[in-house]
Length: 163
Ligand code: NI
Image (cartoon, rainbow, N blue to C red; front, side, top):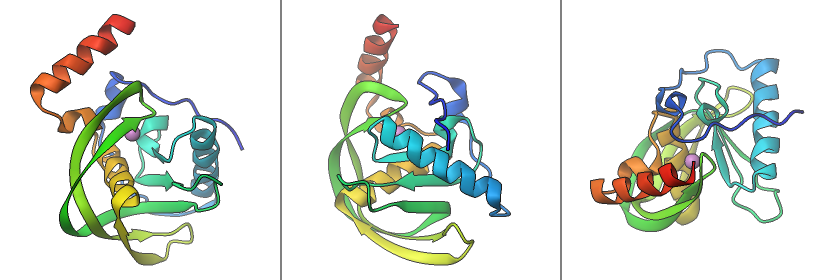
């Protein structure tokens, strides 16, 4: 396994839309393993391939403290949204910044697993928020893009002055 380099905001590659995975082969499984290792090292609970400069619809998630609840999403698609929730979010691509974001509270999604089998998953609260945040990455969206313009400008100012 190897540690991948995480892209940081405002890298323009974070704005790219990821391509669907058409063939889940050894290479895809290596990417998944590397993404988990990279995410755990960075102390994240989710990582999208876009963030490690891989333009494919792949997400890894583990919201457990013991690193024993790995969730792999390939070509995920949200098919139902229920309710609203506001949670404080951060992102490995935007270190040291967090802000409350409005998301759907419950979601039902369809995804492929690492064997290419279609499965359906219902998620709520933290897992739901994490999945929505990571799917945003695959669409070239960051959590700060979901904030009000004044909050976005405030955060961009902080980041600019720390560069
Ligand atoms: Ni993120």
